[in-house]
Image 1 (cartoon, rainbow, N blue to C red):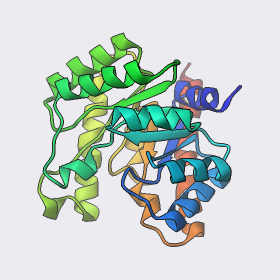
Image 2: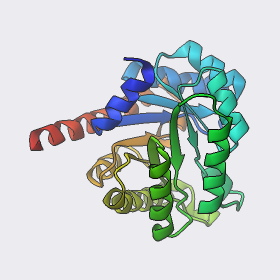
Image 3: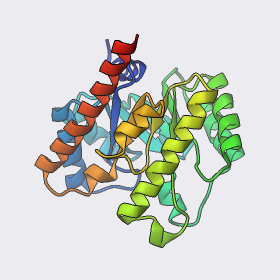
Image 4: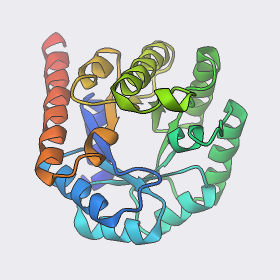
Length: 251
């Protein structure tokens, strides 16, 4: 079983934990700590920005599946050439902070252009913008499912800067992303990964909502100690494994 197959298996078992260093995080020392912690903890995958130096560094530091995130088709295709195990269109939080938003048509254009640049089948994940209505999210998710996209990721955000950060902002984003997960899981068969504001408190709710996995970032990257990073990731992995066990018991 190769690396990406292991990630797919965790998704199938509804216990995937993807650790993101951040689409705009180019801090090498921070990224090293996050990747090392994810590796030791036994995360399902890591998610990094589309930067050549960081992709090559990640390949040296870990044997976990490497997912590269971007909204640029050329960057995503280049990431696969450099040895990434999969790609993700998203996430969009850094754009929201700048007042930039994506609609469903723009996402489909990026997806199709990226597909056209790839010379082989790769693991392909797409984040559904939380800015669009839930009916548009469902319609977009169905189109992506029809195209054979491997994983749909939800998100949540606040448009006002003062509400974007801090505990209240994180909770609000998590609530919105989990709500989107519930609605999408009712309408598509493709696996769903919940992101935005996911931490040790909210991860359990994401799995209960129907998520096959969670994507965590700020709850890890904002920590300064590798020990704290490791403890946080391990805690969320324990929550994910508990979800898997409960599903097996119900089967």
